[in-house]
Image 1: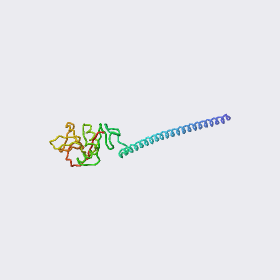
Image 2: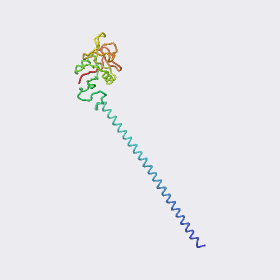
Image 3: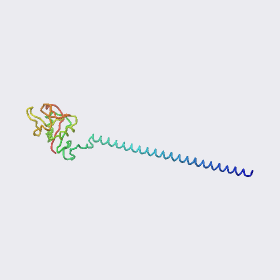
Image 4: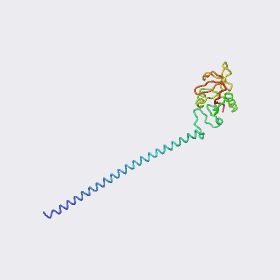
Length: 208
C-alpha cells in the first residue's frame, strides 16, 4: 500500500497540471477573443469616422462651389439662367438687352423724366416699351425689380385715347390704367399714370 501513494500523488500532480494548462489556454483564448473584438469595434468606429469625414468634406466642397457660382452670377462673370421665354441666342439682341418672345427689352439703370426716357430709347433705335400681350406685361413686371419704369403709353389729354410710342392704338382689354394722368408707367403692382416730369427708370423695346 505504501508503494502506491507516490503513484497516486504523481497522478494528482499531473491532473493539476493539465487543469492549469487547460485554464491557461482558455484564458489565452478569451484574451485573444477580447482583443479581436476590441480591434473589430475600433475598425468599425474608424470606418464610421472616415465615412462621416468624407461626407462632410463633400458637403463643404459643394457649398463652396454654390457660393462661388452665385457670386460670379451676381458679379456678371456668369450669365444667369434665362427665364421661360427669354432668348438664349447671343446675337438676337444687342448687349445689355434681354430677348423675350421675339422682342428685345432694355431696362435702364438710371432715372429720367418721360420725355428724356423716350429720347434715350429713340437713340437706341427703339421706342419706350410697347406691351402687346399679358405675357410681356408679366415678364416686365417680374424683371424690372422694385423700381417704377416708364413705358411707351400716353395720351394727349384725358379725352383722347391711349396710344403706344410706336403709333399703335392701345387695346384697353389688355390691362387697366390707373392714376388719372397722361403718361403710363409700371409700379410694383400694376400699370398706372403720372405727369411726364417725374423721374423714373424706363424700358425700351425693339425688334432683334
